[in-house]
Image (cartoon, rainbow, N blue to C red; front, side):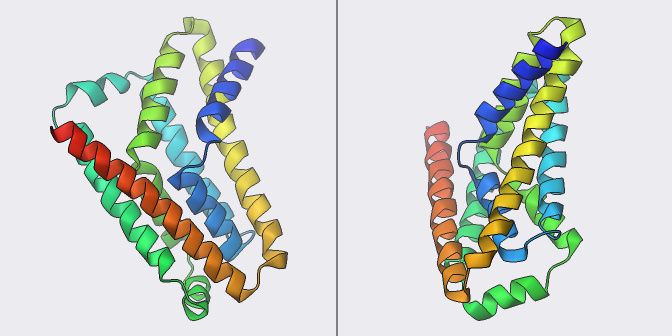
Length: 204
């Protein structure tokens, strides 16, 4: 059981550590809000990943391939939402950053985190598809431990991101925060374009 847990943990880290829209968002919340507020983004991202991994383990990965039009719809929704977030970040100003902190609420942070997580087809394919297939490939007795390892990787990584981002706040002036938001916006727009290109290719 320990080996299955560690294998799931390793695969979970391998899938979640590479930079992605979800990681950029959680890190950005840590920089903008700090602890303990950023923990709401960690909670939202961790719960979404847990849900997707459980769905993958129960056979939902087959649904991604069997429902006509599901993949294009996911790609289109993801591209539009990431484009919105990217443009919003590119327009960052010191006043806008202060408004973001002032308008903060746990519910708002959870909703935004859930949208980034659940409207990101690559995250869904990784968690539901890849991890789901890996879990079902294990012996029945090892599946719970393997899934627990994969889930633990998500929670550990998001906590690490939020903690590192909070530590950076000590050296973040308002001007630096603005540029951080703008760089994050560029990264999100790159992912939006990537999804849009995949959407066009799927329709051909």
